[in-house]
Length: 266
Image (cartoon, rainbow, N blue to C red; front, side):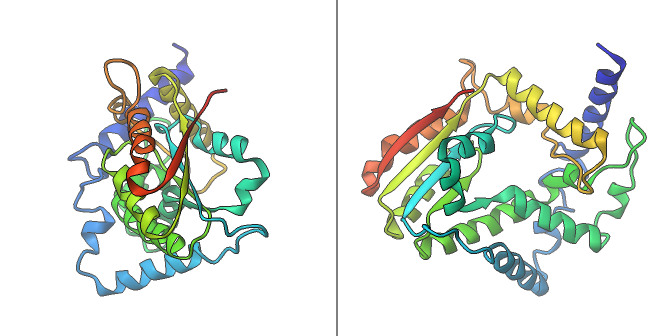
């Protein structure tokens, strides 16, 4: 292993410990925004502003068909690339609901308010401080809550929608199918990006490290701990995203929806 790879792995190990369950920057940490602001009435206003700003972009001409596209695939699989390749120019006619973008907004708020100044001041093995996106676990729950609200708003308006996510939670499929049925949608396309675990691990690590090393993005790169990615794969080598995508497509008829599964491979 090269010295550069050793340094990357050392920094990744520090972040994995920081963001692990029980760690100061873990998803369930008392410092997570959904915990810190649980009883803060002003937070509702902040959330409403984020939702309003997210929805401010107009749909491209030609939008308006009640069709839903749902992505499935572990972090690092290449879902955004797949969506753009499959839909082509038509992708711009869909409203994209992406919790990662909402995470960025929440992290920007946190930076401005010095909410995590101590964590962001911590220097890691490469001599650089922790970057905002490396603390994304602290806004994970709240970003999911906000993206759920955005999705429901878009569906109520009957807009064509791309629901970007991993589909790693088995309960999400029925929730999405119920919402689509209630909103009068009739067809759903599921874009599955299935890659071997080692490919997902390498891509997620390389994507994060390149941004951190180059230092051009003030928010830094998105860091996903290796053990989190590993947890999304079964003994057979297939991801839970695949299983959940297949289950969603099979179950769509029970909700008066037609569905198709499109698997992307490079």
